[in-house]
Length: 338
Image (cartoon, rainbow, N blue to C red):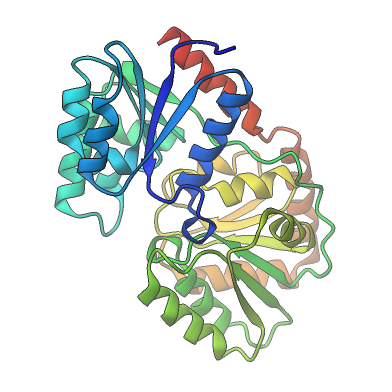
């Protein structure tokens, strides 16, 4: 039996396509599946353009609930504005386009217009919420922070080698895999291997350059593409440390998964990442600074006391890591109470 009215969820096309996997898609899928398990009637509409959004929201009955992925909202402000006059529009803002490197003026303007007409805005981090308020895009009273969870299947880490480095995320400029390879080029004297897992579809030109650069390490860098859940679970369990060299990151689902299995993190101190590693078990370095990243990695590889401390902190953080059930429960609460 449904827990309430139908939820019409408008998301980017390809939400279930593993080759297009992204943090936003993972988040949306967990919300969809979790709400359905709780008895909600969740009706998905995948959109490739503003016309698809207009068709999706026009089919919603007066007074209905429309969840809209923030990426979709940023390039379809007119349908969102129209829908807001007859339905409850809730935008799920995975990122702040106005703060995202490479966002087009059209996306920034579309984001601002769509957010003005949302009844509620759900962000994935406190940083994103504060950024929306700071930029005058949403008043604080309309924002709810609902961080991503982590999968229960992730077991405690059992690292094979301290020098097994793991980087998980779509291979794209904002994830900074080029910075990681630059840093590793400064550490050829150290004993390490690095697995870079993630889709190459979103930014194929950038991904091709990263693959080419990785090839110069003679097999020490593995570019795996997308890993299924079982394979990525193994990668987390065997890794010594997760490296997240992002140039922009609202929260970081890979970081959430690392926290869930007690894996230390070396990451950039950008956007929502400091909040996501609160409680210790992480080294943070400046954005766009491969020399600082190399120094942090060298410290991890050469200082056993540092590794011991970070692992102990990460193990304690594991017990506090949120689960996807927590995320879905908060969503359900917002849908019921407004």
